[in-house]
Length: 159
Image (cartoon, rainbow, N blue to C red; front, side):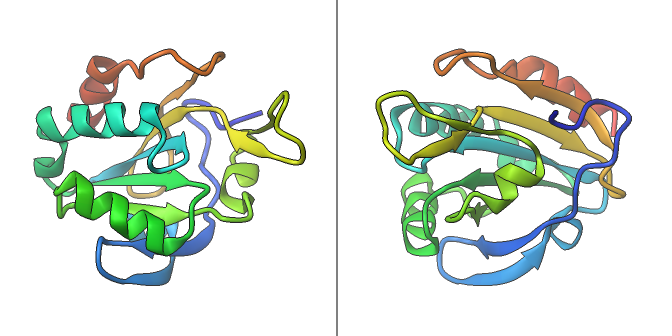
């Protein structure tokens, strides 16, 4: 079961991409002084990811004081960096979850019907404080629902 409010999110280590480079980084080290927003969208250039992340740019999420905005997708670091350059928001970073280990640590992976041997994470968002305590959790129960952006922003404001 994915982490819920009040629980501590797992501290994974994966390649963290910034649009130019990538380095093996733990979630704990990627969080800002006030915490972070961790958003899983499956694959970087999927229609949903492009839609959601452009909304985050327009909403000013890159300007959240001391709150990291972190994506997780199953793509490799080169695709992640290309997606970040496409977004043109230098404060966003993405974890490359090529083998699904990050998503598995959050218990988000699900096998996809009609996609042999492919699993993707449920689309989700977690607002975490600096100690990785989950202050807000959203896990979609379908593949098309939008993120509750306003609820996420309220949780970030309360950090």
